[in-house]
Image (cartoon, rainbow, N blue to C red; front, side, top):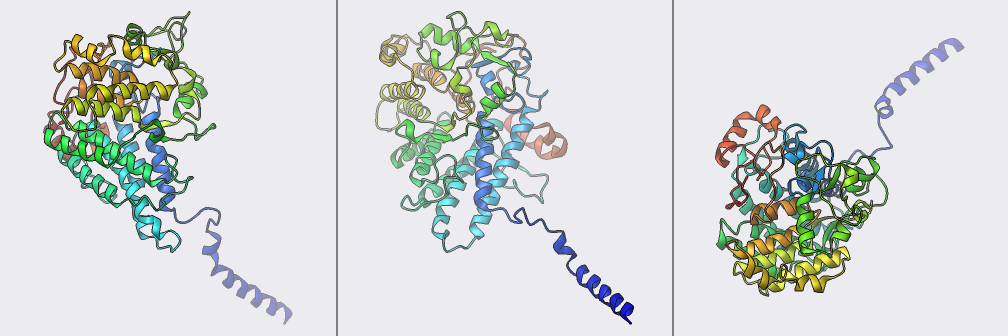
Length: 485
């Protein structure tokens, strides 16, 4: 009898345990749902990393704008976009790791109902939208026509491409709506969720207006009326007014949250880059005091590597220590950039609270102050830098493009896409043809090879619409080109 009871008890326990087998499969250490705030934080870091990194597989714009030069492997200095699949990698980073996370953050924050945080929701959603506009504007400025209306839908693996100019206009509309919805008397993200402004909505509003200013200027040569209206509206609403406003991602002293320059130029143990002769020659000619905070010296001299040529590390200048500090902030938008944009706007006749010379001097001043460089007064007074003298001595037409473009190039040192946009829009300074260039100066990224193979029909239509999927194809906003290669 006892034996029968034991058998029955074991059977009951077995049935009982089998009913709870699903519980044994649960991972109680990891959350089953990701918060919208954490997705925003992830997207923000991915975006900053992609813009800041010098990793040769991800971002070669310091090489293309000839601020840095490769020491041994010179493919990227010679405009090779294919070997390391650079266009594919940038496309993937922005669509998958930035825009998709922002899209999900928007969805989850919108759906979350919490009495403690509901008041913060409109500002959070507005900031997510601003970052979304920032990312999409970069894709348009970099590739041309891109997936937009059909993007981010995991059920649609073959999205159509939208017209770049149409996307850009829609982004401006979205940006205006986001700016209009911001309530500066209420908070948003916490300081651990927002590594740029710690949730300060007033700062985010300035960032949004400064982005709007930049986008407006990008349209200046192709849609002057919209450009002027956009720029003047952004200025009136309130753009950056000091370096304290800079849109900078705050990196940390230790990996994995350190600045990617530190990761790639120090922790990697590699000596892949030196200063490029284009920027060094220009700064040497101007006796620019910022050389001391931008670069190191070789026997007391600033020496740049030949463009597209192998350049021995020990024989050339390198980036200065500050640039590889692990906690150096990564700038997405800066006061220096804003003042150069305002100088350009004033030169074009826009009403932006001052003339071109005033904004130009303020931009150079902002750059010196940001880097802690000395010798500003003498530099501004030198005939090659003084706005009126430089305008009088310029042979370009209009002269202000060369004058503002040259100083913007120097002021936007280490700014990757910002510097690339400036060089393409103003076509100054005149860059050098690399020794083994695989194309003319790349005025755009090629479309990803993956798009050509997996989304061929839509890729083909987009390529035809922009004038061909070539490195030299100028995008809709890029009307002029003055290089001789």
